[in-house]
Image 1 (tube, rainbow, N blue to C red):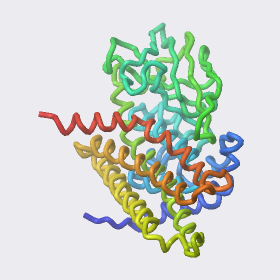
Image 2 (cartoon, helix red, strand yellow):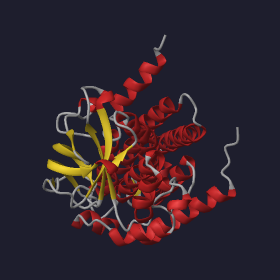
Image 3 (tube, one colour):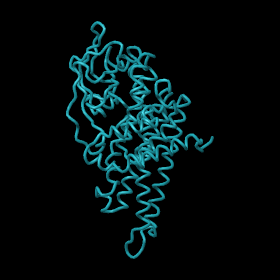
Amino acid sequence: MDFELSDDQRAFQSLARDFADNEMAPHAAEWDETCTFPVAAMRKAAALGFGGIYVRDEVGGSGLTRLDAALVFEALGTACASTTAYISIHNMAAWMIDAFGTAAQRRRWLPELTAMKTFASYCLTEPGAGSDAAALKTRARRDGDDYVLNGTKAFISGGGVSDVYVCMVRTGAEGPDGISCLVVEKGAPGLSFGKPEKKLGWHSQPTAMVIFEDCRVPLANRIGPEGEGFKIAMQGLDGGRINIGACSLGAAQACFALAREHLLVREQFGRKLKEFQALQFKLADMATDLEAARLMIYRAAAKLDAGADDATLACAMAKRLATDVGYRVCDDALQLFGGYGYLMDYPVERFLRDLRVHTILEGSNEIMRVIIARRLLRE
């Protein structure tokens, strides 16, 4: 068991951190304030290989591992968790096409997706099917060489902006076995979008409903066989959970560093804050929790790379811990800053707002506990 990163991994990590420091951090507050979707910055990230990190290289991907991807998302998350989270969703959607699509489908969509000339969204959640994802109602009916879609997807990152929507739709009976995976392209007849949602955080990526009204999609856009969509969606989420956990760690690490610096310089009662044992203990707990969560994320990524039987369990555990710890560390950092932490002049409140949703998406942390408990209680 080797806990040291390879030279290549250190290089990926350093490259991502330099990009975060120079291309994301100086603009993150403005993106948040103006609700700007930073297309130019993301295309610069894609030029470094971050648009298809674990997509195969023959279609423009970087061909790296899930652990490599976790290192990248953790580094990018130190600058802007909102933008990093969208990049992670884009990567997940691109990987689903790469892993389960035909050679023709991969050639058709992935070169532009990996370059982020086009953008991708993942469409599973519906107004009436959140945690109970297998209850989705969006129906795809065959009509000649097309499917005709009717239904609505909710809380879609990139909704209205993305060019490619990887959608889970019902082509068969109720339950998970009746779900298939279709790629719906922007501009498809019958495709429309709701108004941009007003959110607590994640302001640098738009969120909207995706609406299908007799939307026609070619049969050739189906990813994998009919009835396999739910399995494809869940496999995508295993990696997505690692990604969002890594993003949480990066943001929390940034808040930790800011809080530490604050303790070193701020004085009250004639003493530096660093001299108060209660605050020393708080900082120690924050650092310990971050390290524990980081190890779980890296281990889950390694298990997913290895195809381990318990990879889904490890991903659920790691996502649950990392997103809970990430938000709590940001909250603790804000507390250590006192009233200053509550001001938008400082980045801690932005990280806090952005990370709040990480315990809800990619499967809520309550659903993570359901997954874990089911595995533990198998007979």
